[in-house]
Image 1: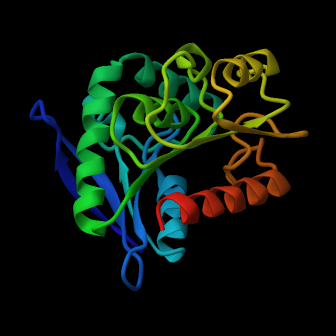
Image 2: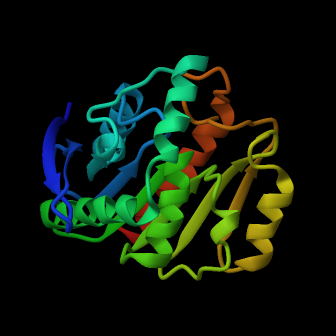
Image 3: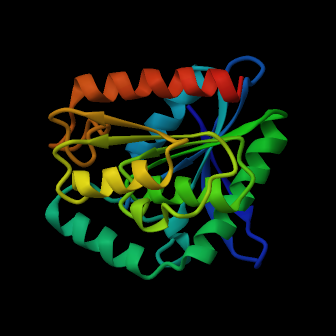
Length: 224
């Protein structure tokens, strides 16, 4: 189990973050970026899982700039609320909070730091790779990755996308592949948007397990 901490971005904004620590010396750090549902219990559980694998994890509450401590479920009303909150955020502000989270993870872990994001967080992970100084990045079904595909990552990146993701059709996935041949883009047959989240109807167990193992192998190679 981790605990909530408070971080401060360069512009003075204070926000919450969930910090999960490994039982022994950290292999490195992870900044774990939420879906549009906030830094909720699912995201905290994912952070705990990576901590069990030996990483120091910081999961920032990026919606704090709009609605402090927002933690949503996965019903239609929550989805609409999450989308509306997400629409009020500016990328520069999101990346300022992500940078503060990177600094916290690097300081606490004493090692290299990766960024892993899901849904909205997948897009943040991509921008973390292209605009910040992470050592590795993992983007799970980031809806805006194709929009920023012309930006060159400064670190190794892998992407996970489902073939049945209606929000990210395969044309967008192919756009990413074409623009960034150096990036490994995995696709998962039969998986839709949010396939990693076991609290969503779109959960696809086989794809989630395979993607997680590929992520762990990637982290072992680039983070420790």
